[in-house]
Length: 322
Image (cartoon, rainbow, N blue to C red; front, side, top):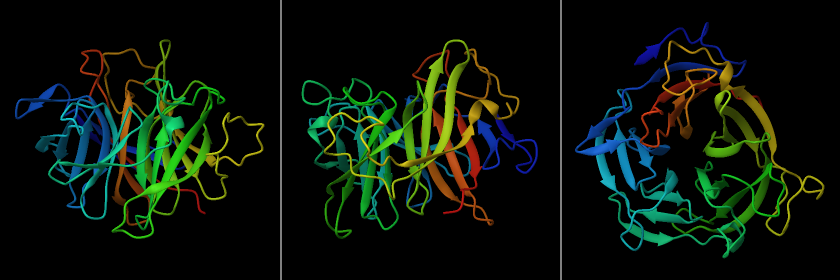
C-alpha cells in the first residue's frame, strides 16, 4: 500500500518530523528469483537510485521514484562467504563501504568485488577478541561532509560499559584518494532498553540516529534522534564507559517518538501500539525540500517472517538550528 497525504497537516508527528507516506510494495516479493526482504540498510547511490542491503549478503538497487527493484547483486566477504551486513555508504568514487556484525568494515568496488578491510579497534570486536556483545556490533555507517570522516555506530554497549552508553567509532583520511585510518571514538547515551539500528549524516556535521527496541506489550519502539559529535570527548582510551567518567558525550536531541505518528491506515500482522511501526533497520537522506528540510527514507527488516513486514517510509525532518 502506498499512502501520500498532506505533509503539513494530519501527518505531522512532532515539531520537527512529518511522515509523508509509507509503502508495503516490497513486502514478500521476489526480484530475479531473489527474495526481497531482510533489509538492514539504505544508501543513496551517486546515480540517484537507492541501494538496499540485505543482511543475507544481497544488495538491491531500487528506483528512486517507484522504489521497485531494478538490480540485484551478491556481496560476499573476502572468503567468498555470506556475511551479516548491517550498514553501507557510497564513497566519492562510487565504491561501497559496508559494515558487518563482526565489527568489520569492507570496501567493495561498484561491481561488488571485495577490495580490502578497514582497520578496527580490537575492543569493538565480539569476545574473546574484544568486548562487544553478540549481535550488538556495527549497525550504522555514515560519511560526513567532505568525505574525510567515516563514522560507525555500535548497536549496543560494550561489556563493562554502562548499558545505555554506546560507542561511535570514526576513521579519518587526509585526502579522498587515501584510505581511512582509525580516528576518535565518541560516546552516545540511548534511552533505557533501546539500541541503535542506523545512523545518517545530516550534511552539517551532525548525525541522525534511529534508536530501536521491542516490548511484547506495545510492539516496536522507534525514536529518531539527532546527535552532534562536535564538542564530544574521545573515549577510545576509556576502558569502562560510565556517565561518571567526566567524559563529554555527544549531545542528543529527541526529534520524534514514532509511536505518536499517525497510523496512515497501516495494518500490521504483529501487535503494535501503532500499526504503522515495524522493525526499522535502515535509513538514508535522499535530498532536501525547497524550505531546507531533509528528505528521509527508512525501511524495516522483516526477518523473512510472516509476522513482520518489509515497509518503506518517507519522512521530512526539520533540523534544530546549530
